[in-house]
Image (cartoon, rainbow, N blue to C red):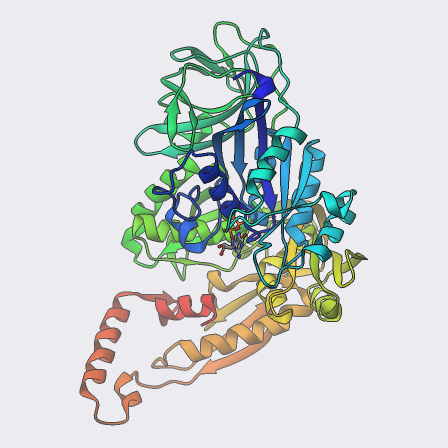
Length: 597
Ligand code: GDP
Ligand code: MG
C-alpha cells in the first residue's frame, strides 16, 4: 500500500471503557472477521486476558476501509489500559500517527484517560475524542462531551458518539480516522529502518517481532540486522495480521507487520530496537524506548519444595515472552528455595503468578511486595535493598531513601475528604486539585510507592464505592525515616515476615503480625515467645502457651469423618513442617500469615 492510503492509529482509554469491544466492531465492520467467527474481545488471546476481561498485550491489526477517495489500509493497535502496562501503551503510540481517545459516556474521564492522553500528546498524535457506550440508559453524552472537549480543547459537537456494543457510529468513526489522522511519512529510497514495538514468543514459531516501517522496505528471505546488537538474522517470514498472520511480499513505508526469524528469545528482538537491512544498513537508529524498570519485588516460592526446578524452568519460559520480568534465586528459612522477582507493578505480579500457576501447574506463595530502598550506613557503605530481610541491621544507618510516585486520583467531589484522609495516612503530600467538570475532581499527591503497593488501591476503591480511579508515575527517590521490623519466634527471626516500614507504623505492623502468628502457630511442648523488633529493641510481644499437640481436642465429640480429615491434614502438615530454631511451624501457617487470611 502507498503511504498516502495508510492510517496508523490506536485506541486509548481508561480500563473498561470499551477499547477491546470497539476493536471487535471494527474487525467486523471492515469484514476481516466474519460474523460467524466473531467472539467478544477477539484480540485478547491469552486465557487470562479473556477470563479477567483485560488486555495485557497490545495487538496490531490491519483492516481495509473503502471511502470515496479509495480503499485505505487501517492499522489499529489495541492497547492495555492498566497503569502497570503503560510502557506497552507508549510503545504502541510511537508506532501511530493518531489515537482514538475513548471515554465511557456513563463514567466520564478517569485517571488513565488523562495518563494516556498525555502520553499521546507527548508522541504528537492526532487525537479523535469519542464517547462510547451511548446505548447505555445511564449514558450522559451531553455532560461528558463538554468535559472531554474542555480537556482537549475543542467543541462538544466535535466529540463523536459511538457504541462499541451495537456498532452505532463506528462506520462514521472510521471515516473520521481516514480524514483526520495524517498519513505516515518516510523515505522509500533511504536505508531500511523499522521500529520494533512489540515482540512475543510463540512456542511453535519462536519470536514474532512486530514492526512499524519508517524508511525503505523489507522483503521475504532478506537478511536483517538489529541495530543495537548488530546481530544478523534471515527473515523466514514477513507478513501482516489481519487479524490472523498472513505472509506478504514485503513491507513498505508506513506499514505495520510482523517478522519471524526463528530466534527463540524475545531479548534478541528487543522492543524499541531498530531493524535495518544487513546488505545496506542504516547509519542512525531510531530513537528507542527506555527499558521498563522493575518497581515491585516479591519472593515467589513453590509450596511443594520439590517443584523448585519446575519453577525455575517456568520463569525461564515466561521470560522468553515477557522481557520486563526479572528474577534471581533466593532462599528463606520459612519458605525454602524460591526466587526474588521484580515486576512493573502489582497487577504484573498478580498476572505472572497466575500464569505460573495455571500454565505450569505450580502452587506458589508470594511474600509481601516490596520496593527498592537505597541504604547508606554510617561507615559510608551503600546497599540497594529489594528484600526486607537484607536490610542491614546491627550497623548504624545514616539514611534510607525510597521511591516516590506522583499519583493522580479522579473521583466525584463527594469523596474528596475521604481520599485526602487516606492519602495522608499513607504519607502523601498534596500537590494539587482540579475540577474537571461540575462534580469530578482530580487530586494529585506525591506518595511513597511502598505505601501504594501495600493494598492502597483496594482501600481507595472500597472507601469510594468503586468510583475513584488511580494512576501514578515514578518521580524519583526521597529520604524517609524507615526501619526494618523483624518478627522473631523464640528469638529467631523469620525472614519472610521482615518488613521495611516508616518508624511511625512499626508498632502497628509488629502488633498485627505477632497477633496473627499467635493464632496460626500450633502450641508446642514449650512456651514460644513471638516478638516484633527493630534491631535489638522489642516493640511487641505475644506468646504461645506450651501444650501437648492434640488436634482432636478441637472436635468436641462425635463426628468421626471430621476427625479422620483432621488427622490426615495433620499428617500432610507434618511433611511440610519448617523449623525455626526449635519451633516447628506448619508451612500453611506462614502462608496464611503472609496472605493475611
Ligand atoms: P477495555 O478494558 O477498554 O478493553 O474494555 P472492554 O472492551 O473489555 O469492555 C469493558 C466492558 O464494557 C465489557 O463488559 C463490555 O461488554 C462493555 N462495553 C464495551 N462497549 C460497550 C458499549 O458500547 N455499550 C455497552 N452497553 N457496553 C459496552
Ligand atoms: Mg481491553
